[in-house]
Amino acid sequence: MKTDGSRTSESKAAEGARKSAARRTRETVIKGIAIAPGVAIGAVFDTSEVQAEAPRRTVDAGKVESERQRLAAAVAASRKQVSKLKARLGVLPEEAQEELEPLLDAYAMMLGDSRLIRGARRRIGDELLAAETAVQDEAEAIATIILAAKDDDKAGLRRRAGEVREIARRLTRNLTATPFRSLKGVPAGAILVAEELTPADAALLDPTRIAGVATEEGGADGHTAIMLRALGIPSVLACPGLTEAAARGDQAVLDGGLGTIVLRPGQAALETGRDALAAYAKEKARLAKLRRLPAVTLDGEEVELQANLEIPAELPLIAQAGAQGIGLLRTEFLFMNREDLPDEEAQIAAYTQVVEALAGDTVTIRVLDWGGEKDMEALAEGIGPFHAGPNPALGLRGIRMLLKRPELLEAQFAAILRVAGADTAQGQIRILLPMVTVPAEVKQAREIYERVQRRLRRKGVALPDKPPLLGAMIETPGAALAADAIALEADFFAIGTNDLAMYTLAVDRAEAEVAHLYDPLHPAVLRLVQFATEAALRLRMPVSVCGEMAGNPRLVPLLLGLGIRALSMNASAIPRVKQMVRSLKIDDCARFARRVMEQSDPQRIQELVMGFEAG
Ligand code: PEP
Ligand code: MG
Image (cartoon, rainbow, N blue to C red; front, side, top):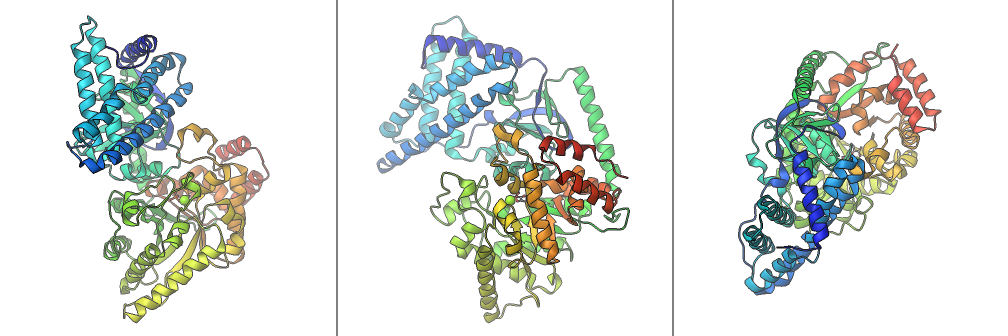
């Protein structure tokens, strides 16, 4: 039986699948982007094989149209995913391209006007089934017919039935939009392999169970990457051809520092992996000894090394790393993986936990930065329809969204102020505004902030003697170039180089396709960092860097040379950065920065930065 499409493309797909299966028995090395250091050796757990949780469901006759629309949306999303996979085939060796292309074409065809989609649509109307149930039933019916066909090539029949089920699984995952909630059963020590992981998915990973993560999509400084670094899970993203090459249960060696995953390693690769694992553990133990030493340069200049915090689970890591406070608490975690908005009490509990754990050290709480890749159901449900626009990264993100829905900002300010009012928290908290582009946004936010203070005072709530400082993220070119004007409204700056690089270079920080163009060392980005830093220093206003740049020891000489004295990074990066700080002299850094800033070629800047030798 033929599910769809022409015989030619079907036999090509069969040939591709056969070759692919053969490839799945060989050692395969895939190079991606090195995201979080560490080595993992374990069995692959491929999430694309996970059956999304979709209990059988029927719907009322009045819901048929909306179910069909849900199905259409899931088909569109699935088609987009498959065509993205196809677009990236070009980076694979020719042999692998030949194997995968027909297979992906077959998938794309099944997501067109196919029997599967037509049948599912019909079942929604005829049998009043929910879209997920209709897809599953139709896929099973097609698979049963395929398997019963009179054909000697039984393996071929099983493969074709498998393809139909594979597409049904993809559709179901997209329909339920909760692929990773079903990951509770991942065996301990597994290496998670996925096409794509959202930041909210990554937040659910348990670092004590998952040894490593590799995905086909993703970029170096996207929020998924940041979350994985925060959790300290060795990770490699943007691995072309990964999901087709890997099968559940395959052994793999993943090196998050090198950015490689070796599937079905031979003896030599396995031994190299074991050596790397031992070397990494030794290095970690050595760095741990730096914990109590101060972050001071050889000529006595103190540098503040703070931690970024994504989820409270990281708190123990922060203590272990010897961070001097939190330079960026991303509060998005409070809004992730839930369907309603957290109320003031829930926020108070979360902030109190962090503030108490930091025992007097600074905690810089950034108010909600919704938008872009950080799409959150809680907001969609909690504040009603909210159109992200055709370019979510350029739409209502960060402070723009909060000023449009001031009730969200008010609740967050109120919760923070209540926590800051506790006797033990005096002077400990600072507040940060995300995605500022014009001074008026800081001004408007401050008016709301003062209004909330007046309201709380009227209610007799204990407030701190001095309210927490209100700072601005400098993470858009507009903010960086208007830094002198924004400095007149804000109490401090935190330079977010992740978004600054993204918006300056027009390169999505989470997109594998353009990852090669994402370069925080591009002279345009560095000039903006320099301009914003100097604007702050002229006013003697505190300024820090809290993008991923801050956690890269190789970039420390340049940042110190530009005048930065506070760096906030994922906790596990602190020891290496401290080691670098302790080997530097400020004069050398300043001279080095001047040399770098004279360059206009990003490649030359890379070479200079990588070649920097202290002393
Ligand atoms: C940044 O953009 O550099 C930043 C620190 O904010 P986030 O990564 O949360 O967008
Ligand atoms: Mg940002």
